[in-house]
View 1: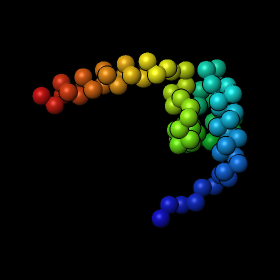
View 2: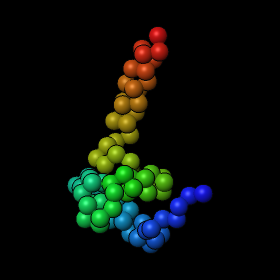
View 3: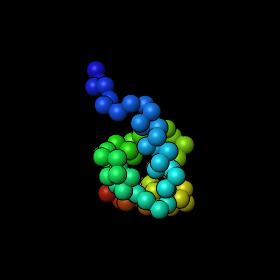
View 4: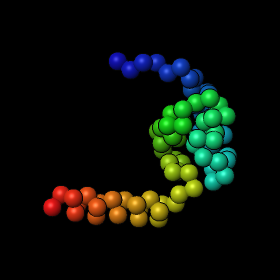
Length: 79
């Protein structure tokens, strides 16, 4: 059984909104430090909402390129 979150749903949504408002200018780490939250926790919240970029400052083309290169790397490793 999962442990209940120490953060309220309102706090999470406000934190996500703050990160979105500053996306491109501030990283997960910057926003999380201001609010005393672990940066990976904030990243998980944004990812779970599903309608925002996971990597701040990244584009879908960049993410696709990284995925393509990673797939090629692991395919070489499997041989």
